[in-house]
Length: 271
Ligand code: SF4
Image (cartoon, rainbow, N blue to C red; front, side, top):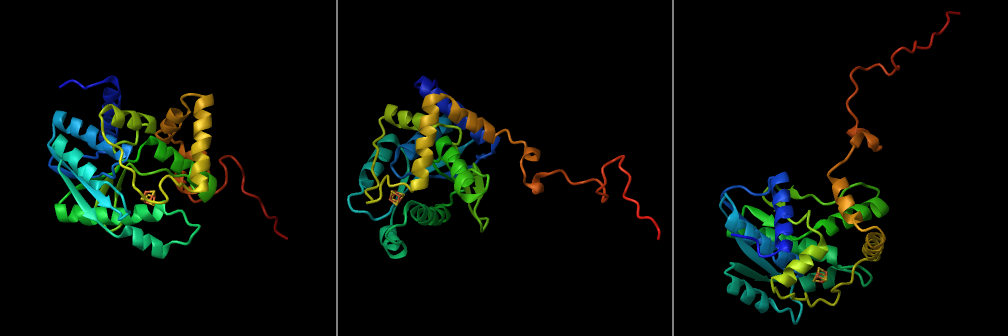
């Protein structure tokens, strides 16, 4: 079955590469796909379905939509679209909106708490459905932004794991779009006629000041030097640990002596 466009071919190639590099899928997997109705999650659902039809292994998909409880959220448009495309979809209605109202201060940016609460619901749904993997729609831009946020503001050098086992060891989270750029995911969702459903939350699009700054920085850099983001993505796959300053990454010393070879230890004359 041919791919429907050059864009789909590119996204399929990048997604297949990520799935293979990180051994994300196995024969018999049942994959719960976090489907918020945003462009990234639609692009993920679509490309996984395309790959599933062509794959040599058998795996199944079930879209999982977490309704955070914000008024006006059109979850029915999501289920209708899934029905039309033959995608199994489960919706879970929650009161995440109220929980956030109780836990957050006025100046807090809610998205990270919201993300953690949604993740908890997805874990629960995965257990109930018998899913073996949970797929999330984070893409290469999310990875690069997280890398810079950690570098600039948190004092550590890490991005996002492409594959991660939850703390209790019960769930495996995968991010098959880690090699796909945000612009590609956006264009793909549009090309496939998938309806973008706003989350209807008052904070929608209200990113932290730090994330906004990093996004703007990357946007400006990419405009001045096209290919910067791809170069950063390549850098994440090409790390020279010994050229960083983390001694945990250095090769273990062979012996216990600290003297450099050929240097005589200092002599102390007898009185
Ligand atoms: S914009 Fe609102 S609904 Fe979306 S992740 Fe942030 S807090 Fe949650």
